[in-house]
Length: 225
Image (tube, rainbow, N blue to C red):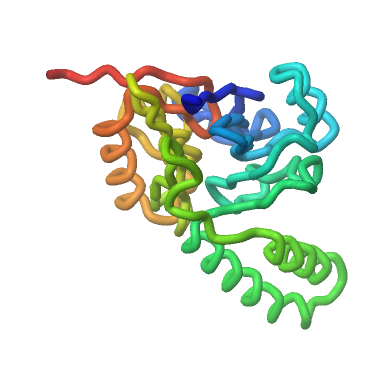
């Protein structure tokens, strides 16, 4: 069976500098995509609130959240995992570098929050418990679905590369925030490493025929030959 993908929910940026927006004017949410490969149903970036995403998932696929076998997070930024609790039967994956980096970040915060106490400490402890559920992603989920590192937006941000017979699709996460960003070769303003992010963007545009941006609908890659 050939790999297939379905956009469950099209994301949006809290503010888009390409539209002249300098501060948040809406709630940010990431594009959520379902990848079907053999017996695996891989949901990428469950970003809407759990109840809304469960309903949207059924509307777009006719399936239930319990049918999802795997969840892949392109980054561990909270906006990309807001609806994760709706998929409690699935194994959750992210890039090893992202997992290690976020784990170190949380322990650093915990050292500070122990002194501060209260809600800050509880929030950090909840995230640490969440990390116990998340595993380092394999290089391949299926013959036609592979991990695709795209460092820069976060330390270990990564996408999935789908390779059906006729085209290459990259689910890019924040490496390609919106179609508009890609068209003007601009990376996300919140990148931890802008230079690395630019290299990742150039790389995916050399490889992909179709890009699923982190906060927008799919786009075709038009190359100048």
